[in-house]
Structure formats: structure tokens, C-alpha cells
Image (cartoon, rainbow, N blue to C red; front, side):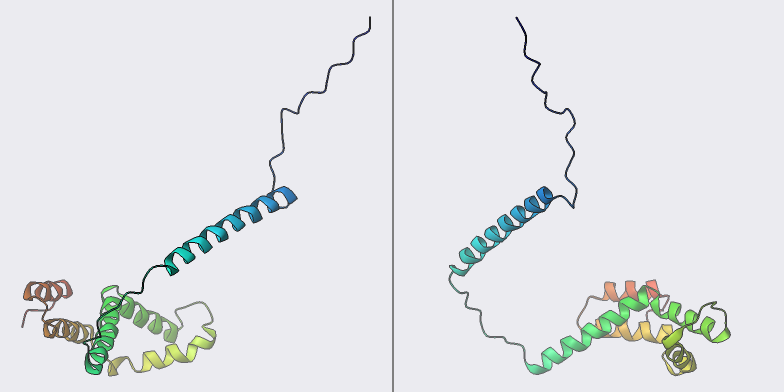
Length: 157
């Protein structure tokens, strides 16, 4: 009696697909299709909701302009608090004195102009005082304004 050879065993090691395999590409496309289908279903569900009626805006054009101005001042204040302005002034000084060992390229004229007009700008203390005065003018509480002045090293005058 003759025995048949054993059946081949499944490989113990299967190669994991890489990004270049057709199988992984098909799997990625299948998953992407599922995400699109889910997003489409959600969009249809949201579209079925009734519209929300909002009250008319009570803000006048002047209020909106003031908010835009305050937003700009807030950004300038945060840049000041982060030390960006003194860092740029130092960088400009180094650029003009040749202390930076790299070519500034197209930025060189801008750095030179910034350095030349440094004495025409408000000092750090003047800028901080303006920022805190704006905050105080918006009706912010005095302790917060006082804290801002204390942080900046300004007196409470």
C-alpha cells in the first residue's frame, strides 16, 4: 500500500501588503468608499433638518468696525507678549551689522527698512500702555488691566 504525499501546508509566514501592492490599494479604496458613503448619509441627514431662524444682527456697522480694530490690537498685543517684536528688532540689528552669517535675499531691504525706522515706532512700554488702555476702555475689570500692567512692568498710573 502506497501512501500519498502529505498535502502542502499553508505558509506560516504571509507577507504583509505594502503600499505598492494591488491588495493594499484596493483595501484603501474600499475604505475611502465607505467613508464617502458615510459622509453622504450624514449630509443627507443634516439636509433634512429644518432651517434655523436667527434673529437679525443688532450690531451696527460701527460696532463691527470696532471689533475688527480690537482684533488687530489683540493680535499685536499677543505678539508683543510673546516677544516677537523685540526678537525682530534684534534680528534686524544683527542683519544690519553683518552679525547674521546668511544672505537675507529678498528680505534684506525689508529688514533694512525696519531697522532704519525703529526709532519712529512706539517703545515697548508705550505699546503695552496702549494695549492695556484699550482693554480698560472696553469695560474689562480693573484687576485684569492691573495684572497686564504688572506683567509688563508698567506702573498703574
